[in-house]
Image (cartoon, rainbow, N blue to C red; front, side, top):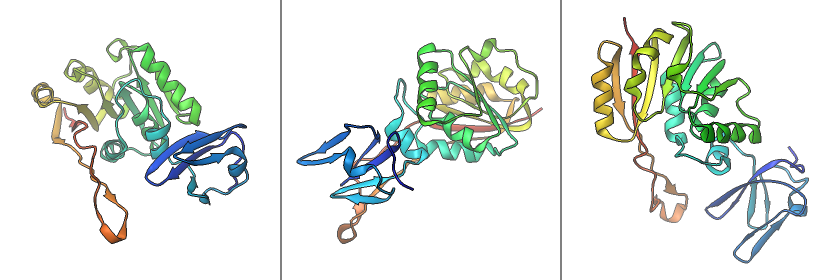
Length: 246
């Protein structure tokens, strides 16, 4: 597939990656090396120009290198596991609230039939919409700028739910009402005391509770001296999952 003006390109040189939209006059400098518009347009994704690789953006690279962040994002290492645990497919209607920068919503929307997402902050709401619009994502997402506590929702309507707010225990009874029986709800919390409070309040509403965190360690891809990277994204948050019980 040829790269045309207006396309997004993931540019890699050494261990650095940049996600850029190709426009006339575009150039990127890395040390003493320069890559210009004329060297890219018409090339195929996967081409190499000098020391620069021209790669086709994936959803992961769009989230990591393209999304504008007003909040901490849910990293791909967590987001794709969340989607797996929620058990969603193209027949699923998924509830989400706190959109944040829209990263998890973008993942859920690719797997679900529809996502209904609430965000109380107007700033975060607008930023999430802008991120999706920029990259042509989330066509099956209905985003609503309001607190989920104030929303009028049909009981037993949703097939799955994910909650990313500071005090999710205030919403548990309402979430329980709007989820179908046996549906999975997930939560992300940064501290253990928040997790403990959630577990306490979830008794009698959600069963099969699980608490976990995901640690991802990358390795330097050099065959002569393969070893871990010096830095890693370790603790990003605790994930909690449970099924609605009656």
